[in-house]
Length: 460
Image 1 (cartoon, rainbow, N blue to C red):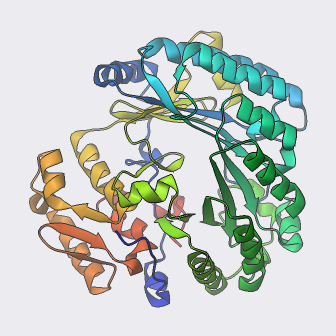
Image 2: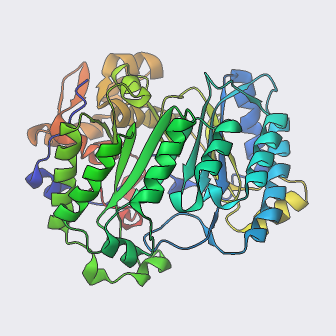
């Protein structure tokens, strides 16, 4: 496949509407509370029957300070003692979950997200990983993909050395923007020196992969100022980059009201930032994976995409499509058997479940046959920008043209606009359609026609 992207301003302006990011299909807005802990246990039984490796996601929700752009599930506190009862409950949940899964199933993938995972102390991090290893069968370092999100303001060389010692081999760093005016406006003061010190420490300790996150569309950003940040990032040569579109939705996320709407770049400036970023990264040798993600050509994500082995889940793009994902911690989402599930969303409800020795599952969805068919199609498109129709028909047991008869008028429209080409055998997303892959996926989404799309961010 061609891992490039074409920036067509006219197309982008016409197609830039709200839509899901498809970290799952159906998306989380379809979850309901009829799916409970009993439903989850039934899906675990199905998962054990199928076997295969596991993936663990841990949500550590605490942050010392609030970033005004943030839409994550987080708890802002400077009191580090708040982590003590939470971690005790997390240890309980680990034991409850592990007891459900066959003990010979290997955990090939593990991720700590937040919040700020490094909010907790070194001793607490070490203990959490020890408890995890006591209950789950973790792959060895050569085969396991163990990653953690790190805030450079909450980590130093000793922290990075500890993380490597307890098993992490991949690092994701939040940067967003180095411009001082932007940093002040979003309440995230983070120097280049402390950021690069963490990167140096990660390399010195043998981390296999380093990924950096940037955001465009923040207050006071210009194409020139963001290009300066990106030049500095390219100079330190991370393995992967995420360049996210900031979605300003102060009506939904109260903390975003701390920023003045008049300071947010207008759409034409955001598009200029995106266009120049794509140019800079392409010249620097990065390939476009999709959905804001770039990687070096020899990175595992880029290789997996070329080999049609890429997958997408709640943490984004992944090389472990065969893993069932167990979500641990408050608000965590898992994907087990033919289901998605989410844990309780408040510390109080999460603690109450575990005090009663109950799984903290409070909502989810069991996928029906139509969901699984559409999930397969959407996943292939969003990961590989192509779809082998006969392969899908063999895999799913459907006549593609009949099943998706209502989608073909949209495919014709996309083809006329140069987003894709298609025939009886294949759908091929063209470079002009790579940035608009969410629009193409929405054509196959049975739920999207019934939804208020303003619950989602703009595609660009």
